[in-house]
Image (cartoon, rainbow, N blue to C red; front, top):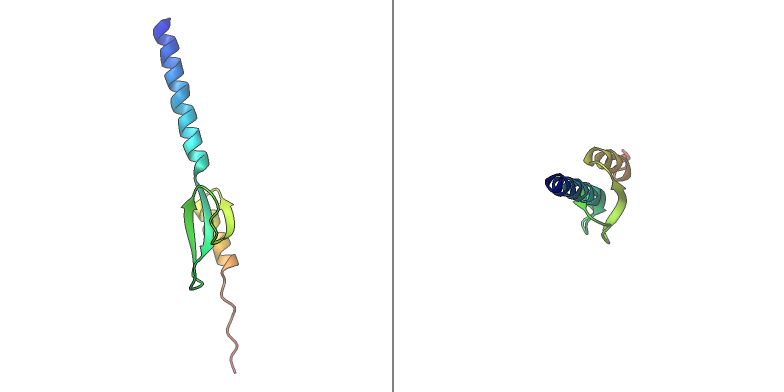
Length: 76
């Protein structure tokens, strides 16, 4: 019985640690000094963040395409 309780505690600890680590990963869109947009993985927003947080990198990439789209150049 004692071994079962120890095993159960270890399993619960491993599960809670993995959930906590997964919850900390988020994706943000940032813009640097040169105006270049990038998707980064961070634990929290940065001063350069222009959008986010997103749960997946794919969501962030789609939002980056909309947020950082270059305007069409006008032909003269």
